[in-house]
Image (cartoon, rainbow, N blue to C red; front, top):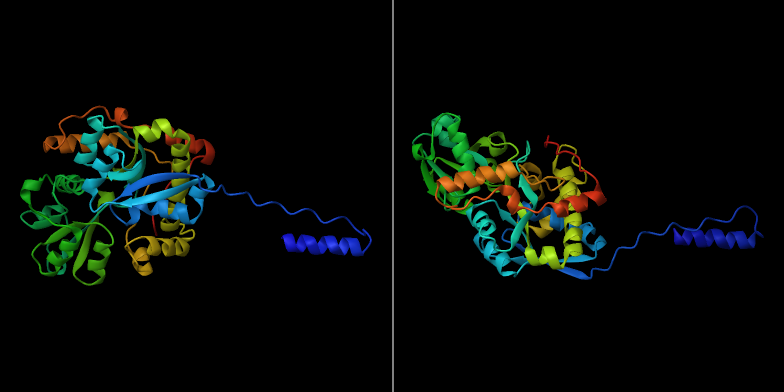
Length: 355
């Protein structure tokens, strides 16, 4: 644009001012040089952190003058202690006993936004059954007496809550099945050697075992408990109080990343190839076709926290004796950051299920 303007200016001078002068170029909005670092904790290089990777690649965080220091932890169980110690300022964590106990114990953290909600077409888990059992197990009633793999510790997880809801559709309880706690990687082996009959798996593992002919899909958990929130963004009290402007900027950039992600993997498929390219570079899922084939996780474009969902998780884990204190969910959250971000961004488009 600058080159064309200079050419026009020179021509104007040569021609003795004939005709109107060329307009000055429209300046490109300057992106702030990142001056604030936010220490962000995570335990998985999977899709739950996709909006942050996208936000970084698209320049959303740079627009806010922020750079992210991604701090990896070997397991999800190590993220909550790290954030309560102040080792990180923000993190995406499961709505599980560890998180709920830390929130109830007033360990200096608050849930500030949603990071994974089961909108239609965006499940947390996929139930698969071995090929040999696919003709026998066609619904929840058929699971009675069968071995089902869940991530450790089994029923004390969000997956356990979802399985209990699925079984309850036919008046069964987890005591009616044989729960086998296995990591997702070990679930693949167990399905292969037929040491379990079914597994409640996360992606990309579910799509991989189906594509490899090891198992068949039985159901997706968004049909069992639609709208259930399974993970959330937490901030430390210090981040909330001492760096509030940065915390608002982080949320603004994060929600822009969420919206780009949901547009890409929803039914409109906006910039899907570009987003998939970013995620194959930044996550442990390197196959672009696998990203295109698997059921995506979903997040609220407005970061809306589901208080009813949190209460349901409290009640479920409380019955298992894993959560002893269940304060009102609204005391565990701080929605002021999403509200501030929405003043800048406006409301997001409702999620569109993948086609």
